[in-house]
Length: 280
Ligand code: PMP
Image 1: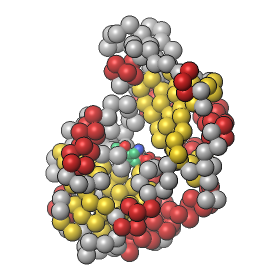
Image 2: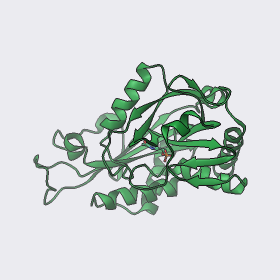
Image 3: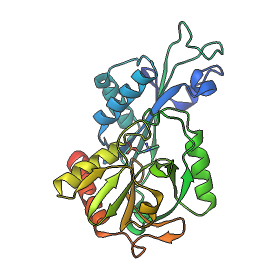
């Protein structure tokens, strides 16, 4: 079943209007929410970010977060989802094609679930990454459907045998194509500040909280590509990748080329969050 506006219906019964503004302009927003042990993880935070994105693009959401959370829980239950994701998007809806907002358009909300296992091998062994110019717009804090900048960067990374592209704007590292980036230098954790140049990742915020609890010093400061290459440890965070060690950047080994101790400690703290929230 999928959630189509306020109804749970079979996927085959849903149809997208060819003039839906999400389809034509990328005029919409989305969230990806992890489900562990049948329970959505940090759902309230994802819905709060959805509301922020909606306000930023002046899109009226059909319901408040409380009601939406209820609907999403019903969707997870209807699909008996244990381990996977909820994809949720809201577009400005169908209207005759014109860049300016239509006078009346009904937003279209869609949510569906997918079974996805945790990325065990990546979490254990780490991943190879490469840097890529950040060609995206200046409102990366909005979780917009316009993802071409990220798509092109990720595709180049995949063609180079890498799992993630690390984006660089004016010489500094912003974030990954679909993740946030952290480095460890002399025991201190660095990540780009939560401004307009990055998505304010939910996993990023969880990791910052865990680091604070573990007494790991944190600096939300932009750092250079050189600092990335020379870091003691690098990891990326995201709903799908969790806290994922990076062993290589641009074919250069990070540290000794295996996941480092601070990364391991934060992975453990993240697992404890999953156990605490979802009992999984
Ligand atoms: N940055 C970008 C560009 C992303 O697409 C994602 C994935 N949603 C993230 C960061 C990580 O955010 P989160 O931890 O909320 O999944």
